Amino acid sequence: MLIQILGSGCSRCHETERRVLNAVSRLGIAADIRKVTDMKEIMSFGVLGTPAVVIDGKVVSQGKVPSEDELRKLLSGDK
Image (cartoon, rainbow, N blue to C red):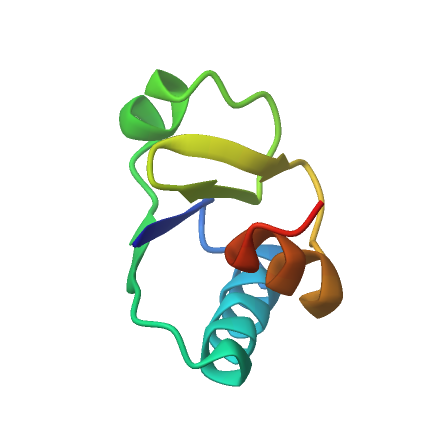
């Protein structure tokens, strides 16, 4: 699983990264987690607001810091 965290490196982006790391750890799943700060690359996803979270190429959250519960649901496939 590839998880990308899109953002400029602001405090909200760092908090999103922390929550993603915690969610992955709690679920015990293997994931390649990458931070994307290049604006051209961020724009290529069609994201209008950061921070954003992309899982396996699909934008699943943007413009907010998702809760750890929300992230765990997204990562485990629960609706």
